[in-house]
Image 1 (tube, one colour):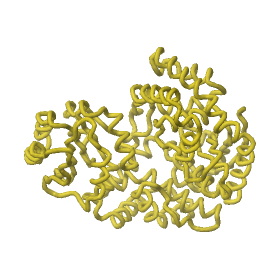
Image 2 (cartoon, helix red, strand yellow):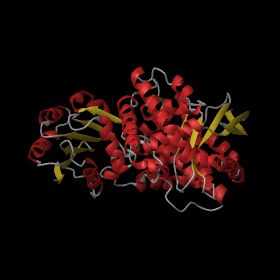
Image 3 (tube, one colour):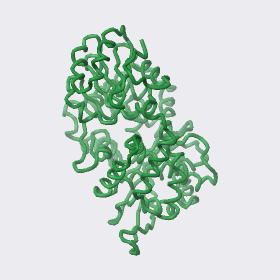
Length: 488
């Protein structure tokens, strides 16, 4: 049964100096079994972008965790997901830095799950997103797993979830987060003049605690709800975090292009890295630095993010952000210049740091070693980094347009030498790297730089431990300026 708790926020956004436009943002705090079940399946099936370890533990410790027939169903679901769910396209006209402004099957399934009262409606809402035969098989498997979800998550959570929803509202009100959201919306130039109606869907986790995950899809916010959690300061701040992302995504195309132009005008060699931190860094600082303190009455002294660059970067920018938000001052060119300056002070070694550069990766690989989905999954497991851009090694014509400031990660095997050698037409440094590649026994890694842009060249065979190589790369103090075998 889907239940709702409605909250109305009166925000006053200024579209021109001296002119106030009252805006009411409404949001419901909801409990929706279909999206909770869908999240459960993605988590135990190991195809969730941000799986809940607490939810995985509940499943693995149950009698179903070792059931071979259930494992078979999960493997089938995972296979269909890997083959069909990575398809997407970006909306035209937006700056390249706003690549998340687009559409993909994965997010569309998530959204439709929030709107569906049961699996029958969920299936009808996602019709034709998969081939008919695969969709039929997919939902047959989901139907088998539904009773398991009800036994392990749904029924044990039912009463506690309603109480949790009320406590979350109280935490939000205690911190006066509606007032802080007003200031944040002004800072972002949030384009909400025509009104906005959001829904917050709680994903129940009946046992365990943790930071969990939250996300926003359009006007829907998904947030993990640890029902044993006593203090909801963190959970309220995570909801605020997603409102910040929603505000950023609502910005006009003109403003987004203007922000990009401000970064491009800056002369720092780290400006593109500072720009890539902007959206997540702002949301993290506003939620963990300001919203959490407003609710808890104290600073959040722990990590603000699992990603080191987001954690350290947002903490380095918090004073700048606070100075703007407290004065209800919108983001401007001065803010961007100071943002870049702070980033450069915090990450002076960003150009050679594997930890930082891996987050800015263009992946090219020989698909006889592994497919793109598998490679991205391995990178995610080893580094907690989502690689968004990837191509087959044979499509190296994309190199010059996509490489830009990215780290170039090339994955091949002993039979990939000719394809890798062809890259030297675009990157002369590869003429030195290729002989090293031929010499490399493998599995191993060569590192090099091309015009201040780093390259990691992996030589692996199918079945080699790619994750281990990635973890060893992260231990490197810095990437060498000349081509060099760093792991053999």
